[in-house]
Structures are given as structure tokens and as C-alpha cells.
Image (cartoon, rainbow, N blue to C red):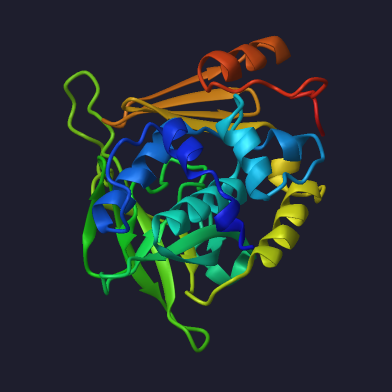
Length: 291
């Protein structure tokens, strides 16, 4: 029996608050995608504890839907893939190279998971991704096409092609950096507008769930992986993006206003995860003080 046949769609839709249509069309895809991003937090606490999180449908349901936990890209996008397949979409699982901090796709391994989604009566495929733990993440699925700027729930994205290095085109998702608000009546800083930043690069060949089980284990357990070395969480609340990186809490509003605060200690980090992110820290897990 395929995994999607075992998936509890009712529990998923209830958890994300989706009360719209249950049909495989673009409106449902965008709506479910946005509801997921607004409801389920991103976090790496299993990896921080040296555990590769399970990607089995029952375990994803227990963790992300029935408890006060979140997950990282493999969990979120596997969960979304099962939901979309249960709704009647065709889903291809993709791998991507994260480009934040570099402009050379070949310098990064394929460690991110994204989805290519097709509806039965729509010739246009969509890029979907509810598991990119960054401010430049998609909020809604966007058509797989170049030359168009997408406004997805207030964020701005576009897809471009990188120089082709193999038989398949290399796609790059770019996010627009919000213009920083002027301070004390001054003009905005030069160069803050019209700034596009590469988020990740991908091709559209399919990867299987077994591939992600290997990648998931590596990212969760390798001692040099950032996910195994420090607490990392993000969540969308209203018009504010919350990011916790170790003990640094950053709040970014839709207008570009950024507030940063260093949390005092382990107790405050736990309290912030509970109150602001809706995450209950697993018993016995130490969040701070890692090399």
C-alpha cells in the first residue's frame, strides 16, 4: 500500500485550519500551502538530540499534527506531499542546493527537499515548498516558469535559470529582500530596493523517499551539520516572521522592520519556544552550550 493511502488527510486539514475545497486545482494548492506555512513551525530539535526524525506518515502525523512540535524540510514537505497526493495531485519530490550565502550552486550539496506539483487538468506545474526554514521561503506554491514575479501572500519571488551544467535546466528560486524602512525621516538606504537573493537551485528529476531517508540521516547526525549543532526554529505569526538561531531571537515584520534580542539562558530559550513558536522541547534535550 502506498504511503499516501495511509495518510490521515482529515487530521492534516484540521490541524492547518483548511476548510476550503478538497480538489486538485491551483486555488486549493495555494490555499493548503499557505495554511500549512502559517500553522506548523519549523524546528530541528530531533537532530539537535542526535536523532534522525522519522518520515513515516504515522510518525509525521503524531509529531507535527498531534503534538506541539514542528519539523524541518524533509518532514514538512513529505507531509505536504502525502496530503496533496491524497487530494489528487501528482507530486514529484525534488532535491535542491541551498544558495543562501553563496552564488555557486556547485559549491553546495543537494540537501534541501522541494516538490513539483501537477494537477490533473492543469498543464502548468507548480513549485511547492513548506520546509525552507528562512525568511525567503515560499508562502504559496508558484508556477514553474521564468520571467514572472510572484506575489505569494505578501512576499515576492521569481524563478530564473542558472547556467546549465548538465542535461537538465537548473532552476533558481529568488526572493526579494524588502526595502528597509527609513529611519527618522531619512531616505531609504541606496541599494535596498530591487534586491533579489538566490534561495536554492534545483532540477526537476524525481527523487524517491529512500533517497530522502539517506539525506535526512546525514543532515540530522553529521557532526558538521548546522542542524545537529544548534537550536533553530522559525514560525509565521500574522505579519511577523520569527526566527530563533541558538539564543538569538529575530522578529521581521512585513514592512522590513527587524528586531533582534539575545536570550539570556536555556530557560528563556525554552520559554520562547513554548510561548512564541508553540513548540514543546523534548524531555532531557539540552538546547545551548554545544561546541
